[in-house]
Length: 261
Image 1 (cartoon, rainbow, N blue to C red):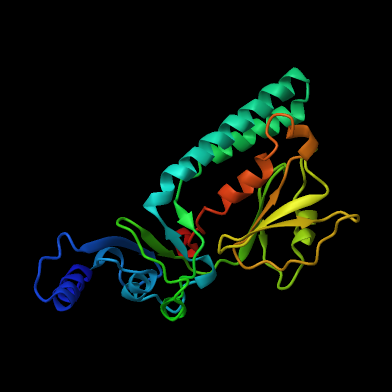
Image 2 (image 1 turned 120 degrees about the vertical axis):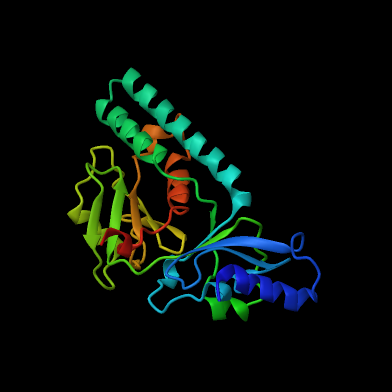
């Protein structure tokens, strides 16, 4: 049975033959699922309805699953525009102060950020059966929303104030800060803090210096480490630049390893 036929049958069964045109919610299902593409769900459908309709495969990586909401797109587009403005302000201020390393880093980060899509991602529990029995997490889906289930990656990524972004093999239970030894920092890298972005979209600010060292943080496959710019070098023009950039990184999707084979 095709996804559209399945949706039509479900709609007819639930609505007793009434028209589904104005009483259905269309969502997109992508990734490691048997039901891909657009499907129609009953009006007031919830995350569990969409997740169960997807028929998620056993090789899907639940920790990296993503709920993409159209209603969050404008907010995240504004956040991206604000970050680009802040990076340009940092670059201009650095040029005035003859801080070439900082100006170059700001320009590089701006180019990198500009290429990132606005996704509308919201942190959510997306395991089909788990969300079905968790009323608090089982929130309504909206028209045009997407559920994406990637496959499990085997690396983590280090980005931000580094000479070159690094894709590194995941080491089980290794503290996040130890990955920094394998990715050369920029002269403008903060030596006291870094941001851990887990694949489910959670962001942790981790102290990495002797004076503020946080408890060890183990990474899940696909995690991102954002090395911030030295705070005092950007605080005059963009005091929240590092935390806001980490938050935007948390909206990005895991690349599916299958796509690169």
